[in-house]
Image (tube, rainbow, N blue to C red; front, side, top):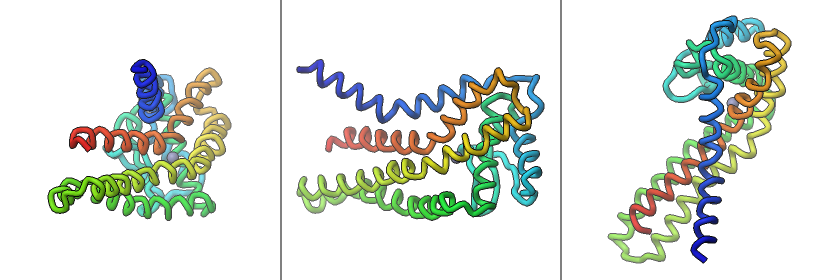
Length: 229
Ligand SMILES: [Zn+2]
């Protein structure tokens, strides 16, 4: 019996944490410097934005993960993707520019995603708040049932994050494979030998949010074990 429990736990960990490890592995594997590439991630992003007549969209460096910010209309890249000359840097830059294009065209899927992400900020805050307050409630009410209910509510709220990111996957896949990859091929920014690597980076980029949301759930569960719920 214990072997089944161990196998089930491993599978559970694999499902929850595997995607995050895979995303990091792919980004790192193709993140090696390639001096033969025509430009850095930031240079390519600027070039592609100008070509799409999105001159007002800025390209900035960030430490908070690569993303396109629809509020300030900015493409933000991690330092290694902003200044790096690698397949990962180039593919990520093209992916984030694709979001700027989705926004400029007011594509319905992207516009819905903006609303969903705004709602998620609140759902995440409330979910975390409910979980953080659980020990306090236990001290006050001394009812494990109430606390268990509260913890379930908190985890469910955080699980909504995973569901929302799964439902917005088509927008991410369109950014990667409907827009970024064809642009990289058409503009010959990468040689044909580099396209399989770029495709895997673009796939990882598309799944980044789902992977991160799943990993957040794991962190919550770890945290609950520490509190011995
Ligand atoms: Zn994206």
